[in-house]
Amino acid sequence: MIKLLSKKFILYLLIAAIVFSVVFSIGSSSLFADSRTQVTEFVTRFYQLCLDRMPDEEGLSIWVGKLLSKKTTGAKVAEGFIFSQEFTAKNTSNEDYVSTLYRAFFNREPDAGGFSNWLGLLNSGYSRQFVLAGFVNSDEFKKLCSTYGIIAGKLDPGAAMPVIQVTTGKLPVILLHGIEPAPSGRYEISNGAFDYLCGTLKSYGYQTITLLDLVNHFDKGKPLPPKPVIITADDGYQSMYVNAFPILKKYGYKMTIFLITGMIGDKEANRRLNDFDYGNDNIPRRAMLIWPEIRVMSKYGCEFQSHTWSHRIISNIPVEDARMELAQSKSDIEINTGKPCIFVAWPHGAYSGEVLGLLGSTGYRGALLAGGGVSNLANFDFYNIPRVSFVSEIAPQAYAQVLELQ
Image (spheres, rainbow, N blue to C red):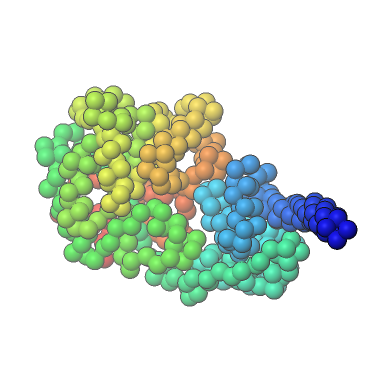
């Protein structure tokens, strides 16, 4: 009798355990589903309000997964969106930037007093990182996060003081093409001339930066050297690797090279020649870079940006062809270097307002001209960055004067 009762009791316990397990499973699944729904809504808002689009499946899944697993916070997600390539490529004004922060992180339109205060900070030189931190470290953002069941977290304000030294100074941006031991035509300078240029910059106390350094300074307040300079070269000739690169390393310098990616081979056997401009203005036959060389220079610290895919005059082609030129070259560079491509140098310096309008939608932050003189950082325009073109008729002894070195 006792054995029979024991068996019945054990059976009862087993049934109870199964029922409890099923009920708990259903309940926990329901709770998890509710949590996932809330977090998905939270992230979707950022896509809509910051990037002006619905989320892509992969990106949404990554952000939601990190929030659900507590591997990130609301503040970090906000930072990820605001300093994403896609958002920075929109090239927003300070007014639009502050308005976006109010809508995305306070869930409301700006109030006049607060808007004026934040805008005043940006216009006086405070970084966008500093202003963003002010928003996401606030009680108002914490309240928004709590309605979605998310930990708000905090951000480092970064540079809290105005960055006076660059917002009032000049930035020489140098334009080169070929560097050869025996230069030919007006668009090539000698190895010795390039060495002299780097030595001159060094003697005046200039340090090279990249375009991405410049973006991080304006957006995040990251400091620049007191005397910054950007050395650029268009097209992507092999001479940049063979002749310029050793000289750069000698001075501890780096440069930005704008590639015509349709002319870049993946190995020595596929090395291309400059069919796009051979013979124009007495331009000689020259070899182009290949991706293995580019990766070596990129690892060192040199930057690679777009000179379009085929070097066609972009203002003379259909707008959809222009879009392809920008998108394909960007993709080629990012796949082969693993680094962002968000700037383009216009072939022959030619562009149109319609083409300029493509930059944001194709993921670009700005564009460089083929001339225009020395940049003034007090009113810097990422969409129209001037450069000083170095051609053969400029004597090396005049380099300092041409660049307005001080």
